[in-house]
Amino acid sequence: MKERTFISFDWAIKKVLRHKDNFGVLEGFLSELLGFDLTIQNRLESESNQQSEKDKFNRVDILVKSNKGELMLIEVQYDSLDEWVYFLKNSEIKDSFKAKGMKEAKVALNYQNMPADDKSAYKRFIEDRRNAMSTLDTALEKGIRQGQIKTAKALLELQIDTNSISIATQLTFDEIDRLSKGEDIDKESDEDD
Image 1 (cartoon, helix red, strand yellow):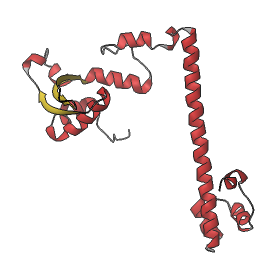
Image 2 (cartoon, helix red, strand yellow):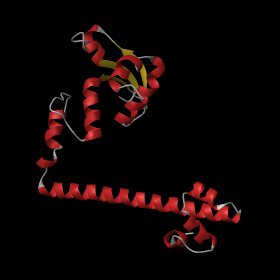
Image 3 (cartoon, rainbow, N blue to C red):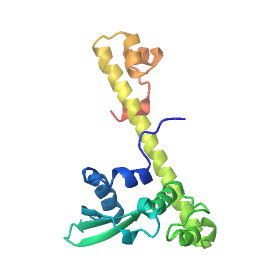
């Protein structure tokens, strides 16, 4: 099993992010989640916010100040938050999920429950996103290719040997030889130079 790079969020909130030295992490997360900057004023724990012994480790109340100076009490229930993060990351709601709003999300956000017009619009959205990513990938590959060719040309001008140029640019010996003769090895890339 691969060793984890980062600890899980539920462990972080239970143990690590409760310490004032680490409030910056939690402030950043909550600011992004809520859509406005905030600073943590205090982490509150009392018997009143613990309905059971397990609650002591499954939720935390945090007093925050918004960027408008408003004081707010935020209750973070990380087990349910983990469920929302899982859903947002994987587009899946497991039957075992109990977080507030999950049942509603399972119905409202289910593709099969969408009206035909919404399904068509969603399909177009996904296809447009796929096409945009493909266009970006193609542009990136083209840019890399152009960079390889420009680098090879510059190294040829410096009279660097073909083997070293091939290693540096990942171009073939044939491509480098053709470049040294002034030939276009990639007309599409050279047209943009």
